[in-house]
Length: 366
Figure 1 (spheres, helix red, strand yellow):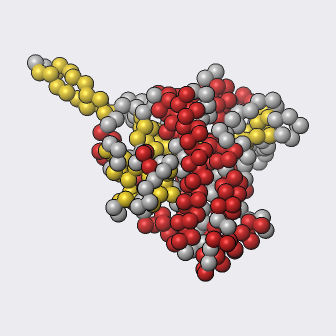
Figure 2 (cartoon, one colour; figure 1 turned 45 degrees about the vertical axis):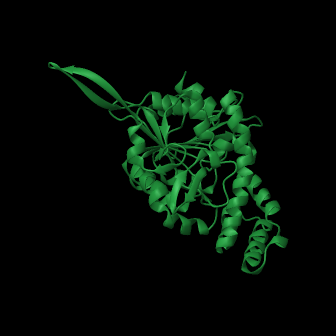
Figure 3 (spheres, helix red, strand yellow; figure 1 turned 120 degrees about the vertical axis):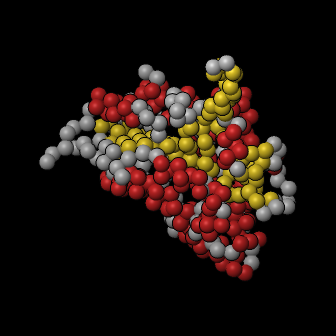
């Protein structure tokens, strides 16, 4: 049976209908790279190679780092090359070097986003999603593997309420129950002859940073958040940043309940997924995503500049997955829109809907 042809009208109708219900939002490094390409894996790779010279290592650390460098020289991606790393001292060295590189970028754009001279491109879309949440279901679930705080800076600049599960003042402890209480308002209503105070949850985003963050640290055998330590942490604490490679899974198992458990539960309860600049390169999360999109046939929308084999493979299996990406086949930059239920992708010439801010303007605000 032949598949129907995809047209602009059909595509735009489907994209608009996708947002009739709230999605679970994933965003990846593509959103940070839209602000500065130095947030990407290529720049991080160069920073690690420069920041960890072989002359500074010895023993097993040296042998493993030589193997990583050889893999990278032979064209392997950073994630795969880091599978060579297993020693704790080298993992800590990679984490601290990665953090120092990202910290300098984060410091630069924290000031610019606060001043309004730079915008994180998904800010308007996420604000629209939070503002449109129904009163009976006022939480937008958002997950990222990113370490930087561009989401947090942009939400603060826009006045969009969010929680990341930490509760307290300067040094915050992870406690989703107590953190959620800050998103309640107290309304006083007259019930019969008595005034009653009723707690009602406000619309807000719930942010899961499943690979850690520049603001998360191990302190006194617990995961804490301390924004005053972001740019210059004391030597007695260790950053909670799960770096690329096989060591990631060992660390993830140790701190799974703190970082991943609440996100897993939210994914299980979701039936609609929005992916923004997300590369689908996390094996642990992929098993959840594949089950949702392929087996359970959940709705999905991917907005990304470039696709990759993982995205293409998933899109070829998932019946209700739309992929919006950059197209340059006609010599000019356009937009490629794909869904497996149609005979071929539709190319929208001269429009850049793969840019999240452009997508928001043309699809959600038009």
